[in-house]
Image (cartoon, rainbow, N blue to C red; front, side, top):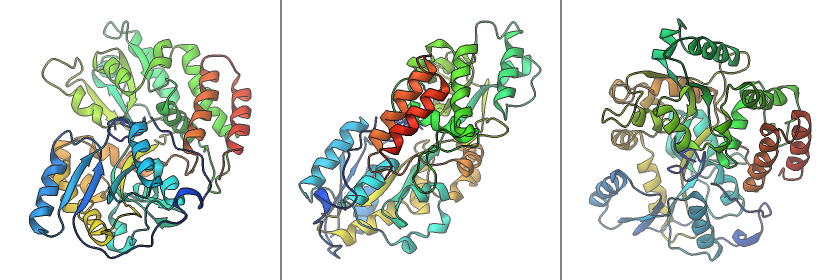
Length: 429
C-alpha cells in the first residue's frame, strides 16, 4: 500500500513519519480527561478522501443518526504534516477532533501520552480481524486504535519474462530470485531489464525494506521485550542481502533513489523483473489506458526470503477516539460502524486498499475485483509490525542512517549492525 495514502510508510503508501521523543505517561497528555459517555455531533479527522467513499459512508451514518451527525475533516496528504496537526491539537487538549485516523506506528505515542482512549475490544468482534492488524492498535496489551486499513509488501513479477526463460513460478528464496533473473537476462526479451528493486531511498521506506529483509532471514529488529537484535547472524544476513544486491547488480544502482512511486513507475515501464511494493500498485500496473507497459504480463506472490517465503512489514491506518472529545460515546459507536465488516466491504468496493477484516480476503466478489487478495492474505499471515516505540521517528532515522551507510559502501555490514545496535539501545522503551 502506498505510504502517502497510509499517511505513513513506505508510509506504506507510506508510507514520512516523525514521531517525537517524550516520556511514557507524563507530559502533555497526563491530565487528559477520563472517558465520558457524551453523545452528539462529532468530527472524523482523516486523510484525503480520494474516492469520495468516506463521505458516502458518513452520509449513511448521518441518515441513521440525526442527532449525532459526523463531519469529515480532511488532514494533509503528507504524513509528517498530518501527525504534526494531530499532535498540536492534542497538546492544547482541543476537542476539535473526536475520531482520528492514526498511522499504525503512531499508536504507542498517542496511547502513552494519553491522547487517545482505550477501546472495548469485545464490542469490535476482535476474532474477525487480521491478527497482525489488530496488534498494531494495541499498546501494552490494551486496544487504543481499531484496525481499518492494513497491508504488507508483496512481490510483483513479470510472468511473461519468467515464462520466456523457462522459469516455473515465482521465487520463494533470494537465491531463486537471483537465478531467475540470470535466466531472464539470457533471453532476448530480458535484455536491458533490471532484476529487482524495492524502496531504498533514505526515508521511511528504507526502514520498512530493511525490516523485511531482516525478518525474511529469520531475524528481528526488536525482540518481544523491545530490545534491539540487529547484530544477530540472522539480522546481519538480512542486511547482507541488501548490500550484496547493490554490489552484484541484483538491485540496480539507482535503487538508492527509489521510493514507492519511483520504483512503481520503473516496474510499470517494464524496467524490472521483480518488484517489492504495496497493493495499490496492482491496479495501476493493470491499467489498460496505455500508462502501463506490463498490463496482463505480471502477477504477484509473497516476498521471498533467505531460506523460504519471507516476511513483510505491516502498514496500516487505525481509528481512535480522542481523549479530549466531548462526545466519546458517539465517537466509539462511529468507530465500530466504520470498521464493521459490512461497511468495510462497501468501502473495499470503491478502492483497492487491503482492509482489516479477515473475511474480505475470502470473499469471491472481492477476489474477482482484486485478484491479489489471496496473496495478500498469505503475506499478512507472515507479516510483522514495525517497532512499538514512543520515539519511533528516532528509531527509523537510526535505521536509515546506518543501513544507508552499509548499502552505499561507507560501512561494512558488521560495523553498520554494531552501530545501529548501539543507537537503538539508547532509544528502546
